[in-house]
Image 1 (tube, rainbow, N blue to C red):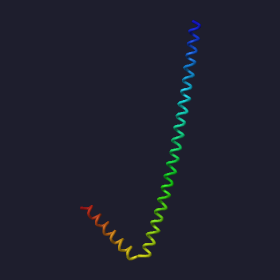
Image 2 (cartoon, rainbow, N blue to C red):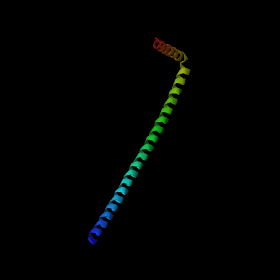
Image 3 (tube, rainbow, N blue to C red):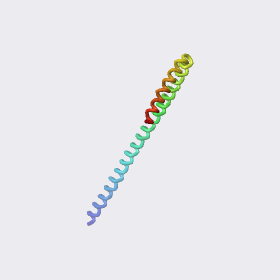
Image 4 (cartoon, one colour):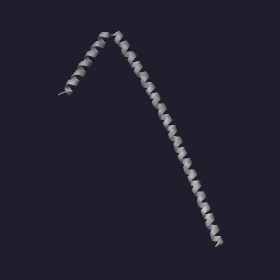
Length: 97
């Protein structure tokens, strides 16, 4: 009976050690996943910031180009604006029918 009790105690102890080991391993896996997610999020955030900065610079360049073109060729700019206004007006009228 004593031998059975010792084997039972040993088995319980081994099972507890395995459970602790599995728990530690799961904790490490979860931490690794969280670290990877954090790194990915930081990378996406940085790429978004860079894209927004590039778009802002592009719009500033476009605005500068348009302003320069209007100053250098005002009649052409007025003609283009008139054509765009007529096209937009025709588009709005066609939607009301």
